[in-house]
Length: 219
Image (cartoon, rainbow, N blue to C red):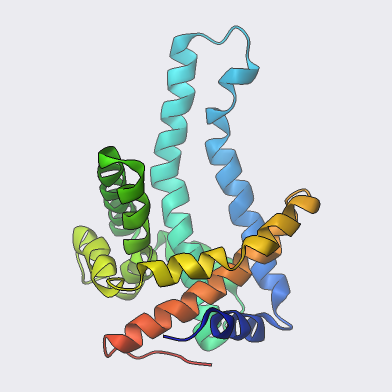
């Protein structure tokens, strides 16, 4: 495995002169996610909202999260992967193409992954956080290995992440300074930080694949 700086340098190298398609895709998926989850924040702003309305809005947001947001996340992650591996700058169109291809397999796979994290979280918060890192590669595996069952996809992620969960945590933590700077831009900087982090994570994933003897793309 390479150093965090190696992953970040490789990500910046990929994004150089190609920020526009990555930022555009990030803006679109962020807006879609906000629209789909907006119902969860509505009740607190509606003084006379009854219990039925609150349950309906929250339930609707939950279903949208499962059937819309989760496949979009798989689409975004893998569109960025194709960009990182092949230089394919059609990130936005690839996002929707990937999200809707083999759709129910991805919906089910992401749901089972989140269910596993939730069940681990019931033991205490820390086990849930640890397992979220174990299952972090599930979106890539669902797309790259459609022959693997939905349950097995997250299990596969857990296997290849064995011994590397802290490495991924440390990689995420290395962006904390940039995240704090994004606050000064009222969150607008996140549209650049997210693809930067995504490309760095993909480099990390490529090294995990190399450890397993799979073909990997290295800078």
